[in-house]
Amino acid sequence: MTGRQQLCRLVADKPETRDWSVMGGVVEKPVQVPAPAPAPAPTAAATVTATVVVERALAAHPGVLEAAVVPAGDGVGVLVVLDEMSTALEVREDLRASLLAAGLEAEPAVLPVVRLPAPPLGTFEELTAEVAEPADSAGAAGSGAAEVSRYEPPSAGPEADLAGRLAGFLGLPRVGALDDFVELGGDSLVAVAFLHAVQEAYAVPLGVVELFTAGTVRGIARLLAARPAAAPQVA
Image (cartoon, rainbow, N blue to C red; front, side, top):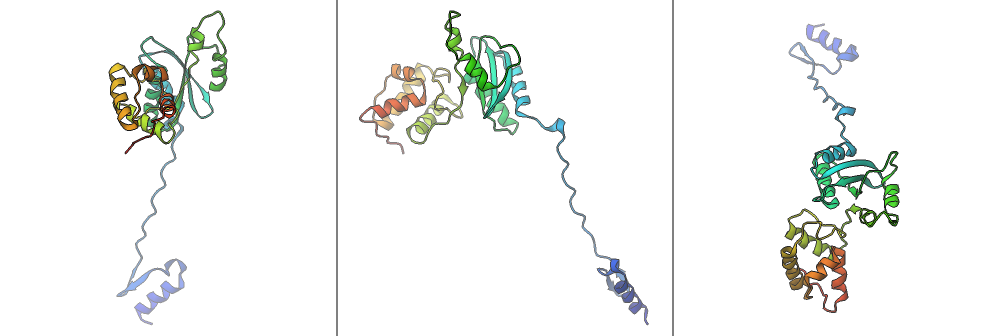
């Protein structure tokens, strides 16, 4: 038996060598490409939750005097004590921007209060119901503080169109159906320009007073729907 035959016999007899090849009397083992190592699982320290992101954003917000983050059924619930220059809507959108920057899409809901309630706080829904109870002789401040700032997307049609137009005039990424025009930063100059665009698109004249009274995109859409000429001419 020649040396080459002996090598072939050796390869055939050993299971671990059956994938080898004999080239010119030299046994060559095929190159083994190692499988890519699995990505390491994220550690608890690297996992940033929505609550952590919101707490950091609240601590850095100049208009937030006190705040508490509580469980909410459909997002992140926040109770805030604000200074006189800040609004719940502004805080809500700042928190959303911080969440998006962290790769999270949770929707924050903000409830402004005069003072934080004593712990245990419970859920956001429970606190909202408690604060929203009719104010007694303590004053109207209690009823005003029960306005929850929660984003509600505009419905298709005039609401979506009006929200897009208003966001453009205000330089905002989005406007919710129930977001207040004044809290969004709207003033009389923006109102005039926005109403002019609305009149051109819908052939319905609306006054500045009506805009401020309606307050929201949904309110403006209802005004348009109540007018006989409210036929959208949206491109």
